[in-house]
Image 1: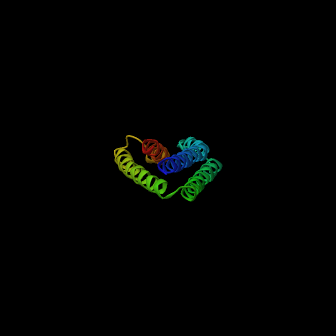
Image 2 (image 1 turned 90 degrees about the vertical axis):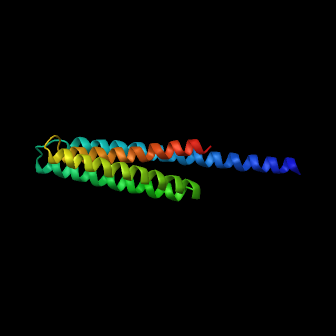
Image 3 (image 1 turned 180 degrees about the horizontal axis):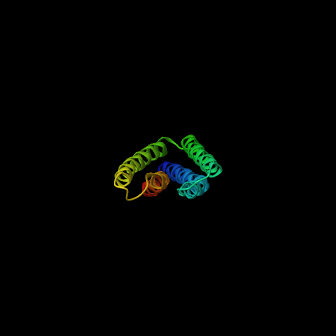
Length: 144
């Protein structure tokens, strides 16, 4: 009787480990192309002298980046169990706070004419997404 419970617990633990590993892998696989798209948007938007065509490309890639982030979020939440959703939401909250602080610093730097707001804001948002992925991955690894 005791050995059956032990085996059942081991099977449940192995199943949970596999689900956690699959969820982490899926987020990273989905997140890498999204991060690359964000870097392309950052590169396209960093030029101060843009033609109308350059601005159109920049807006298009930025819109694609935004939609890709939404797509990754929806897939991650659908795939996750209750505990993984909790980790994702807490990680998003940490990243959101970091983005808010970063944007406040960027506004102050722009007001003092040290650095322009537009290139900093893009880097801050992309960094926030990266921070969200990193915190979620670390929290998931520590859970095991």
